[in-house]
Length: 518
Image (spheres, rainbow, N blue to C red):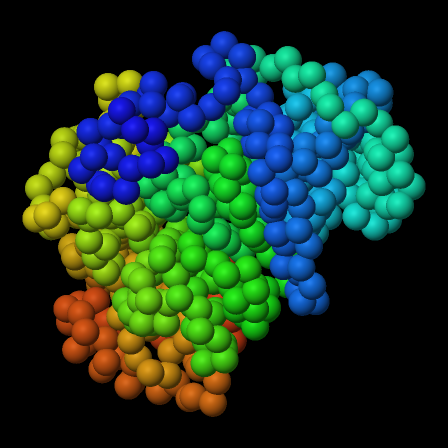
């Protein structure tokens, strides 16, 4: 049977899929495995591994050999520093040579790599450092402030002296990790948790990751792949970094403040033909208007993080020459719904999340845990160990088995007995020509229980007429779904991963209501 990486037909992919076929892609087995070896050392001699486009416009390229050498040197440095297997190493760096050396070097050592977002303020970092209690933190710039706040933490700055020290250490490292040893702590960017929670990934997590790599992103040998998501978050780390490298595929990413012109430049300069990005990134590319100066044509593209509004979906298909495929899942359960980018036998359907990935049984279930029929709103769930595991998102299916997202379970709006989806309301708001971004929440109402409140960001040079917005919505959705309250704002609160943070809006609305209550 052909390896999974050689299959480009959807029906054949389902027939050929098995856990054994996934394990066959790697050197390690169910007893001994090291994720860094799978991503770097076994691909020595293959040429470029990672390219980074920086916000100032310059590009850097790192070969598999260089990353294998440098990560081994960092593993030796950790060992000499007394960092034991199982201890945590916080990597607070932008993408670049030092980031990849420290990430994979910690994994080679058997320590646990903990990537952290560089733009966190001191409180955001403190929450995560208090939670995972790292032995070492690697930073750019002055280590003093972090060291002062955490006196017991060994804070090391990546500078010329540190680079010289690493360069004098051996460039190979004997990995001795078990497949079930912890390798990475990944902090989610969810909007409902009061405190951050680390999802714990083992060395063998790279095996199940291949479901997303092969069928959600469509990675295949020879791809020119670009994922601009930060590797501090799940999409950028697992789908943008570990997945392609584990398959020996050159990957590219972006470092620094987002700049649509620089992203377009990277697509041109690197001849990218497979693009994976958050839905927010595509919307920002569209809003920039910079596509007129480029002629980017893709064979495959995908999105994740949140649903994509229909107008942006159509824009992507027209601008890049291929429709964007959805990839849906959570950090906890992995990717469970995919659109098989680049594969024959599957049609990407606008607005849909796709269909179950090979090896997954997915359904929409009711409150009692029973699967419901097409077009019935319920909660998306996946079978795990014979039981339905709820992923806390609402959804529905159509008659052809495609899944559709209807918002987080806590984003549902119930007004006068009607159940409404915040996502559907927001997509309708985005069809108004004056609206750039939109969010919808339910707010208390004495008569109806809840009514819809919309927050809208106007396009540049456009004025928002509330009555016009409401009239527009009445023609797009059912009469009861129009927003009875509309607030014009300059921007919407977002998580660090770029998702609209409706929880912040609900909290603000609740606080305002409490102030008005005598």
